[in-house]
Amino acid sequence: MRRSLIMSRRDLDFLLYEWLDTETLPSRARYADHDRETFDALLDLSERLATDVFAPLNRLVDTDEPRVGDDGKVVLPAEVDKALSAYTESGLPTSVFDADLGGMQLPFVVHSACSTWFQAACVGVFAYPFLAEGNASLLVAHGTPEQVQTYAAPVIAGRWYGTMALSEPQAGSSLGDITTRAVRQDDGSYRLTGTKMWISGGDHELGENIVHLVLARIPGAPAGTRGISLFIVPKHLVAPDGTLGERNDVALVGLNHKMGYRGTTNTLLNLGEGTFTPGGEPGAVGHLVGEEGKGLNAMFHMMNQARVSVGAGAMALGYTGYLHALQYAEERTQGRPLADRDPASPPVRLVEHADVRRMLLAQKSYVEGALALVLYCARLVDEAATADSPDDRATADTLLGMLTPIAKSWPSQWCLAANDLAIQVHGGYGYTRDHPVEQFYRDNRLNPIHEGTHGIQALDLLGRKVLMDGGQGLALLTDRMRATTRRALEIGGEAAAYAGELDGRIDDLLMVTAALWQEGDPEQALSNATVYLEAAGHLVVAWLWLEQVLAAGDSTGEFYEGKRAAARYFFRFELPTIGPKLDLLASLDRTTLDLDPGWL
Image (tube, rainbow, N blue to C red; front, side, top):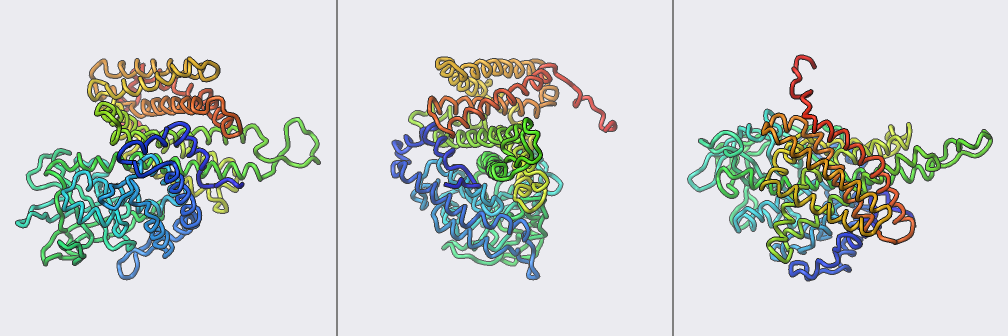
């Protein structure tokens, strides 16, 4: 049977059922309507749709990227609408939502596993339902019942789409500097004016409506993030009975032309510029979500979910690149073994060369480690929602918060490195459009940037997460790691050797963390936060590789030997690289802190 070049179903089954005990989740009331059979059926459906409908679009939307037509509307290939209609008809967009909203109440870990197929097949097209899911999830969590029914329900049903409109041209990720204004009206609505930049899915004709979730300031609000409120701003106004009315004053100014990820429109939007005048008045009509001044707290609900999903998307692009490189190396013949000096002997497959095997094994260790990371985080989402005790739910939520910056950034860095190696395995062919690996790299290059750059995630990890509640999150995470190393030490053998190495690195990370903060100087402590993030990320992934080794146990066969080989590579080639990083951090190096910008 020919292996898929999109994702590995065998790996998903191993992680879901042999490691994460997903089969036990239907014992919980929320998931009682499901079992292994329904999980497998949805995974089968996802694989089929991704392979037959989404994957054929990947090159098309890269070469025929979105454009603005003469009528001012966004033009996309007709096949995009057909693919998204097929996805909607499958019922998959509803999978994680409550039954009373038309959802399946599927475990989030299974939903995440299903989504990897689409992210790997055509991430640019899958971004539309992905954004819509996050948009609706936020409204379900923070909106009023009327807002959920009016604005979230049609998004969940797949008839409408949704965005999050945070950034502005002058502010970027510095949300405390946004200037979009929202003025309260006599009827309780608001009128918004301002400009939003980098809005993915910000305009298109794929659905009946687009629900924008917009951050803005109310007059008199304090400066900084505490003065930000969140608003529902639909592209088309919605009547009380749910029917669509006139066009809201949200105008498409232009599309950003990207290096990759081209299937997703990325827009500059003007609110309240007077292109449209709903009700004959200036300003885009908006509706407050939650309380005034608490908008960023609500938006983080969507942002944190998006950050883990960005990591999942980076993993998926790295994974499909690895599978393409592996097939190429198995089929392409070139060169001869070093011991064979006969130029007349036939060339061997690329995979017969040790350095090619090194590159493939590195990719395997990155992408399979990243898949374990994102599915572990997805399993924590289920634990936080449905674990038996409040303490267990709180523990899962704390661990998820601790791992979120790592789950976003580590795959974005190292699965991009996997894409780079996939190009290298292909040689000169990899640098041409004759093979898809160059597009995977370009598409994946966005992931270290959007939903918060590496630097932002590093500040979140070292400046917030490790300090919250007296360091409870870091303590929980390292306790969880040490529980794994104790199990491995009891088993002995290679797993015990990994455990000893991991325990030592955990000690090092804890000592470095204490050293960074012992002076009480945040500027000093955070000056090299990105180095800390990289070290912590490698430590976490090494832990998850040890978890996979333990899950494999004594099982035999190529799949399990492949797992052991990838773990061996990660512990011998990758984990030791964090030593110099931790040494640098412990030294409280001030090279970057003291650098005069004029020297650059």
